Length: 189
Image (cartoon, rainbow, N blue to C red; front, side):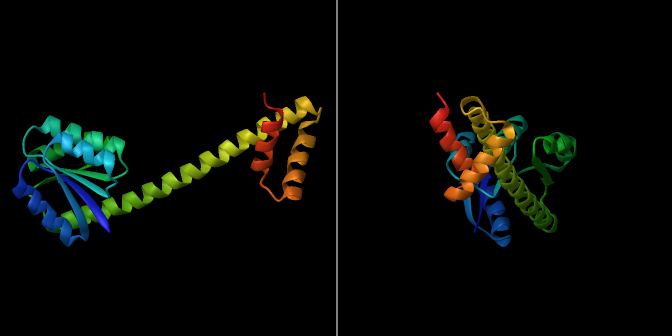
């Protein structure tokens, strides 16, 4: 189930965008007609795509899109007049926002959505990998702190402290990190 948030000033343009999104397999489409509504939805629900249709007030629409790109993992697209699209495209790309010029070509729109779907999958994979690396780094810090406490309190060498943690983990059928946490509870003041 793919979900999208559409920000538009008029219901007519929102309906036209909704029709395009339905063709592309988006079955959960939410509409926001004011920046406050958009901010509320962004903070309360996860979306696969946030689409900002800019009719007027370019600066406000751009700031809404950039803000959405900063606080969510959704792909963000803004639709602007063709003559403006080229001039703001590079600046928006640096902010993580894709720019599409009006009138929207259905064939190109399809390819833009394929690109955003691909980008989102890659981004989520990177987030997952980053999370695993953070957990691993945290485990290394805990183990190092436990080794230091063993060296201070039991007068172990670093190698002895390392082997002690490994042996305890094997004997107790626990991970080294869990054994290190127990050492921290025992010796950390």
